[in-house]
Picture 1 (cartoon, rainbow, N blue to C red):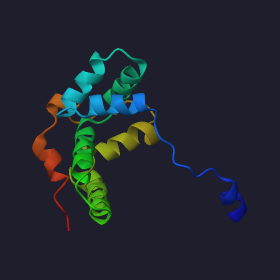
Picture 2: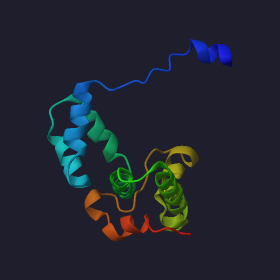
Picture 3: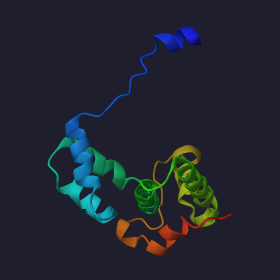
Picture 4: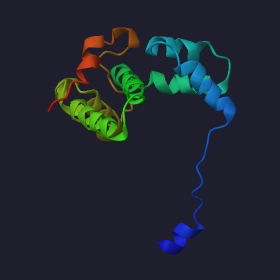
Length: 140
């Protein structure tokens, strides 16, 4: 293992400046709907590909992830890891198995393999802010 590690290139990889500028421009928007609108209106392959990918994701969990990133900026590592542990718990238990976006994603990709998740809600406009906030209430 040591000889492999010695040969490995462990230098950090950074994104090109143009990509970082795109990320800041689009993901710096006020909310998830504005982020998607910004990506949809852009005229470049990166934005189109990113927009298409996000449209396949759970609207609720995208909103939760955005809130996690924004809260995480103000947290130390221990608090951030604690918060992520709580979110994992909520991802399986908060809404119950019948409405869990995590369970639905697993069903669509690994169980039925239809790649057609039925998100609840299925649009960003349908995301309930109170449901998103509930992910950030400690279960312990």
